[in-house]
Length: 323
Image (tube, helix red, strand yellow):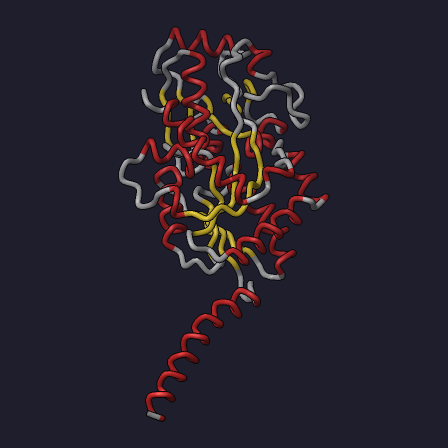
């Protein structure tokens, strides 16, 4: 009888300890560096934004946030790894409208679903652009559209891979302009931009975040920005409405996600660190230089991202149904 009682007490104590260990781990979180997966090669808008936010968040959390660039399949390779990571808060991923919305309409055999991710918070909103090599004959958007219509399939536009947010910019542009162009897939926006500056392709679909430096340095020719108003950092670049193609209006976004079952206290801590990072004057100054838009206060919550993603999935399902 005594032996049975002792056994029961041991089992109860073991169960209590099992419950206590995760709680203690969360209380001490983070106690080692955190990996932030970037689904593309270095140099693109997601990578630039991730590094800026990661540096600031690391200061807030007291631990380094280490970037892991994992290109391939328009971000699906990286998202697969993120979905399978342990839900302990030490592996997170920066996603966008391509990786976390459009990919479901492009890749039927994905190893993850929307429910495999825990939203942490919206990081930034981005401004889609089309840029051309400096010696391309078109001087403005309408001349470019006219050239593309007269030379179907001969104009080449680079992007960061099928399923990326840059690919979606290309798709939006093609649909709005009614043109046929050759889309060239890269493992990230950085390699595509390098080839554009080298003259290997005619143009790129990208966000102003990663194009601003090249435009300001007169290394590429900015054609149009798909926003309702001009960007402070690129005041000479016309909006799509000003340039004569109002149907080409869009806005990209980046958000942080963790694997599903990420404990609520860890989600809250990461979200608070993100909020503090985005309030940093240094980060806000850099975002302005790069034409990245800070989320509004009501857009910073995990709940906002969780509610936003299903709508984005449906939106791109419609856009891509005739791909």
